[in-house]
Image (cartoon, rainbow, N blue to C red; front, top):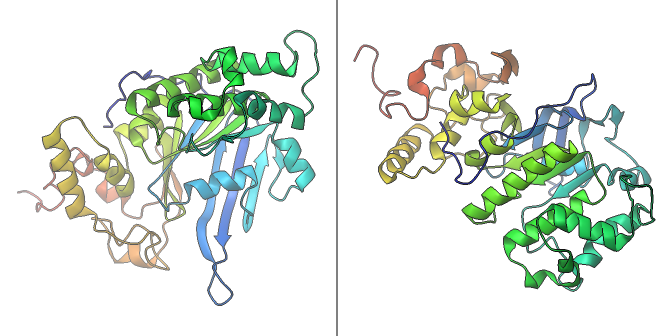
Length: 367
């Protein structure tokens, strides 16, 4: 079980909205990077399929190099897609032309990891926030409550107040704000055009623990008020319980497991999910040491990607058998979620959970 984050709400916003068409859908998404003329392309994402509903938060979880940010960048149009499909509200945007991509920024926005690098240091906050309005011509006065209603300064002030900052912050520069305040400003900039989807790429990882809780609570509040959907990219399992409705676990560009937040956090089925949970910090030093020692024994270090044919996690998996090294496990529907593990029926016992007896995986049966 993951630890809760102090100061965070334990229940995220409302669940996904109704409707037959998801807000975001990826199907067989594959992303490759060219590393030179004489080298084979590096495949960062292998056939990833996921959906995000209206008003829903889906957490994309994995360690560094798992392909999380590549999926987010592909959705944002910042990384070309090698194969597969990306659909937004039913529209195929996989290879949308620059004009359409520009228009889509009114519907799909992003909040990035570094609050210090995401704002132009020589422009005031007001200048940074008004830019999306100018780009989408939402600066004229309109009817009350309409999108783009009010003057640019009024819209900037309203966006700042919504994220808990005073209106006069618009006249100051990024250097005058703390990291948490800058991240609030980045959220305000993303929200000012009223998007329907926000890609949050590690939005809390550069912040202190107490500030993380404030930002997560703010995101949940905005979701309840505006019905925005989030694709929430993170490596920190301690926060997904507070922000996500569903979780997608990635390793080496492959989906290992999907399911509800409660299911993945409390009853992880894939050995990699269990390893991630065991690595999450806990406030008890002895328990933390026990978990880390157990994790070191059971998951040896290996380069993500594993063998060319088999499961990418097989070199690190404590349950790997010869078929795991020869056959790529299919992603199958299991217990209301999805799982890619050839040995799941055999390793589904409680003793395989991360907070079980660390010697249980090595103890012979009947001992």
